[in-house]
Image 1 (cartoon, helix red, strand yellow):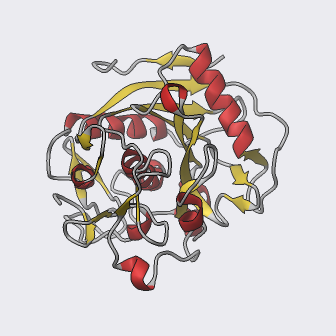
Image 2 (tube, rainbow, N blue to C red):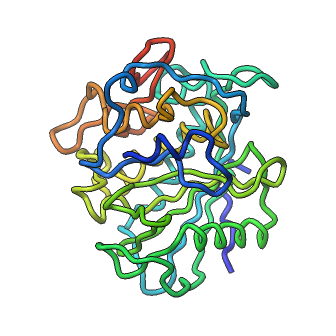
Amino acid sequence: MARVARIAGLAAVACAVLAAGARAGEMRGVVPAHGNGGPHGAAATSNLLYHNGPVMHTNTVYAIYWIPAGYSVQSGYQSLIDGYFQNVAHDSGLQSNVYYSDTQYYDTVNGNILYSSALGGAINDTDPYPANGCRDRYTHTCLSDAQLQSEITHVVTANKLPTGLGTEYFLFTPKNVGSCDGHYCAYSYFCAYHSNIGSGSTAILYANMPYAAYVYNACGSGESPNNNDADSTINVTSHEHNETITDPLGTAWFDSSGYEDGDKCAWNFGTPLGGAAGAEYNQVIGGAHYYLQQEWSNHSSGCVLTGL
């Protein structure tokens, strides 16, 4: 059974079609694999539109590492991702990173999003994988979206963890593990996506986070300021985190083509702040260096790294 490890001090593009009018459990907010396209034409310049659904005013995240015996991640991988979430939480309210751009968006019930993030815990899940629920071209083990949902639900229920629109679960899988939603598979089509199980107070918001650096030419970020595979995963984590905050159920903020704030700036990193080639960074969050894609700002009508 998965057990919660509390963090010290803390309690392409069918993404357009999938975002617009998406139902619970549908893949949306897709980070497209390199070469799989992105917004173009009007979609590349048009602002996000509000579709009357809820946003995440504040957010608490849990990192689930589903890594059974016989599978592995690079040393330091988990601690760097946990540290990233901690640093995002530490800098809550600051205008100095991509998360502040979310504060311009709102819903009609509670008003504007707050940059207020917390890390609820890290969960080491060693449950064995079920029989392959899908097949992809890159990995030995392939998990269907239904299998991912089942494991997330099991972890949440077994550990009596919170549900609802204030919490998001990031499910990280190790090397040589792929996933598919129907015919759309990791590395060949997507690098990550977010979705939801159910709705209302019992909704479970989640993001599927494959090991991005496993197929680097498909999902690698191109820079590694921490000299670790986690750097590429953290980039797509930021994409999904920001999109869930602004469009948790696929009913809040996306443009006329269905693209969310992360989709419109996928693989667009802006200008680095420093670092040598191959280890450049464009964000300093909680004092640590990261290389993250930009996020769309209606205020600026473009992709931003800081402020609005």
